[in-house]
Every structure is written in C-alpha cells, then in structure tokens.
Amino acid sequence: MAGQSGSTHCRVALFQSALQTYEKKTGITLAQHPLTLQLQNYRSVESIASFLQDQIPPSTDFGGSDRLMGSVRRTISILHNLGAVAAFAWASEMVYEIKVLMA
Image 1 (cartoon, one colour):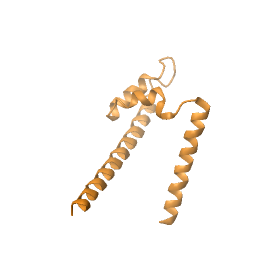
Image 2 (cartoon, rainbow, N blue to C red):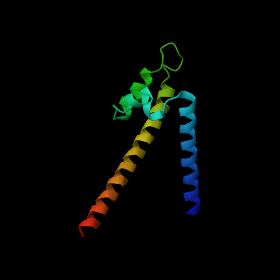
Image 3 (spheres, rainbow, N blue to C red):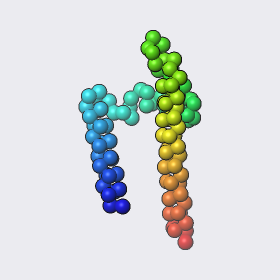
Image 4 (cartoon, one colour):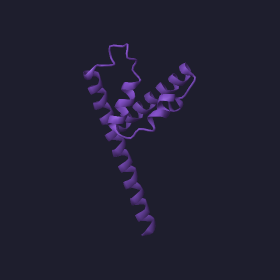
C-alpha cells in the first residue's frame, strides 16, 4: 500500500509539473484555455466527441477517420466514468460525514 501512495504522489507531482510547464509555454492555465471552457458545457460522451471532431479542420486526414474517433470516444468514455466514480466517492464521503455529525 505504501508503494501505491508513493506512486500516486509521483503521478500528482508529474501532472502538476506538466501543468506548470504548459502555463509557462502558453501563458495561460489549462483551466482557462478556450477549449476547456467550451468543454464544460458538454455532459455526454457523444456530445464531447462530436465537439472535438468539429475542432478538426476538414482538410486534415483525421477529420473523417472513424478509427481515430472510435479511440477518442473510448478515451472520453473512460474519463467520463472515472469522473462519475470520483463524484460518487465524494458524495458517499459527504453522506458518511453527515451521519457522523448527526449521531
């Protein structure tokens, strides 16, 4: 278990470092990026995939690639499910804390 904790800490540090590097290179935080702001309006896997596909210029080879979009949809689905699991875990913890406070 201790290895997992260290591994998680390492991933968090790596992710934070990547975010800082992105901000230094672009001058904008990832949270403030126009695509991030637009993506906040979409809730389903299909609506997110459709939005991302619309961002691909029609002149590129990627625009019509069903294989690429299939991979994008699978990735979005995994991330969407992870977000739902995290939200459920957070809500469960809140319910537990409320029960403890009310006891």
